[in-house]
Length: 296
Image 1 (spheres, rainbow, N blue to C red):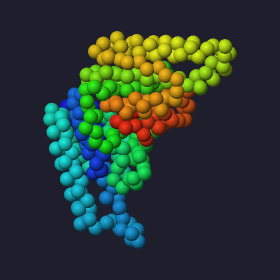
Image 2: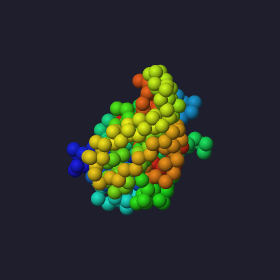
Image 3: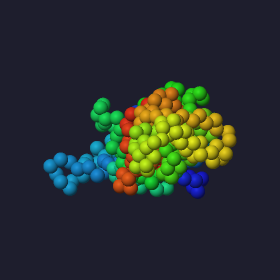
Image 4: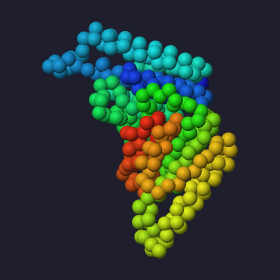
């Protein structure tokens, strides 16, 4: 890659329809960010064994057939990327190992990892593949999870949606969302949900006499304060603030129905150190109708 100093957008390819859609989305994202694209397939065929003959590798003919399928997939990925973003440099690679192991390792040098929501062999009832979950839980890089093709996914009137909770852990999501909205010339819908837990916090601080109206005013003030610096840094982005009483996951899913992208943090306000992925982020990954970025 001639642009070796720029970290690539990395996408995992397994031949499934959603993985090819992930290539298409990743190519556009690489174009937005003037970054190269790296497409990687994790080849487990070299690790396989013939049943009942422990230690004996599968026949070379079977391995070669599998490798030919992989080469076809990678050629198709290159064609998809070239059609979507012809200016983006594309590099493909085959690495031996499980998809989880390979992509976690590759992510250390990537600016973003992109995967399909379901891989080959997924059961129809499984909404999110195990590889996507592992990357979001254990990776140190932002992860984008892409669903089935959506002809209106990049419609200019669709906003980028971001969840705002006011915590330090939520700052990467805001950075990612503002960058995404700016690069796409899209508006940004910032959603902050306050719910019963917020009221419970007030009680523990001996502020129970406060009214619902004062709580709402505080939450609206929090939202404005959090967004102020980002608005100044991205004056080209039109921001719509939405402060609503309710559970964050439900409200964000409602906004995601007409969004081109949903951005959330790995952990939100009140997240415990032992939780690698917050409950809201997990819910959105499983059920969001649009692409989701888990930012770190």
